[in-house]
Length: 115
Length: 111
Image 1 (cartoon, rainbow over the protein chains, first blue to last red):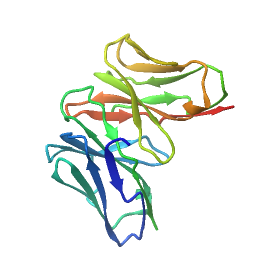
Image 2: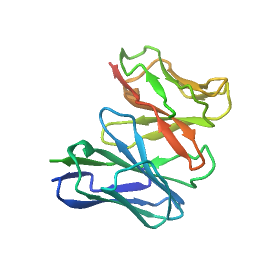
Image 3: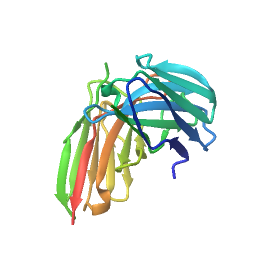
């Protein structure tokens, strides 16, 4: 139990569907992150939120839309995805987003498959 | 673009053997973190190294940060089946705790 919960654990969707991934952290952290882990690439940072404000967008296509309504919750809204978007999407949190050496606590991810 | 290269990509060994995993970059990082990821789970932090030349020990695992803070190694002594997993190094870059991950080393320890 890492204190970071992601739902759903598995998601299969068509390219025209709209779905959302949810992440909730129970650690009292101020920073949250979305990562993409695919089979052929290293873990890639997608977005960083600090105190509910997006502070980093790592050149992510607009078909991925993050939302952070409060410091405990993070969503990733998906629409018109492509087959190459199939991957494990990981959420993480840390105490703060500024200052190095902050350990990040990861959820167990959502395995997304695009048909 | 900052990159971290991990080697080897795959490692299959017998219980009791020693092994070393390497993480190299041409870039300097303020610190470097090592994570282990098991199937169906997210990465879990093992250690953070901060100072060039730093050595940290976690039971049978020894982590070293290069003097120039561009590379790191993880040495496991007398590997056990429970050490099986994906080992990831990640360099801390930028002002927003941005992690640059290596591709990982997939370790299988056989009884």
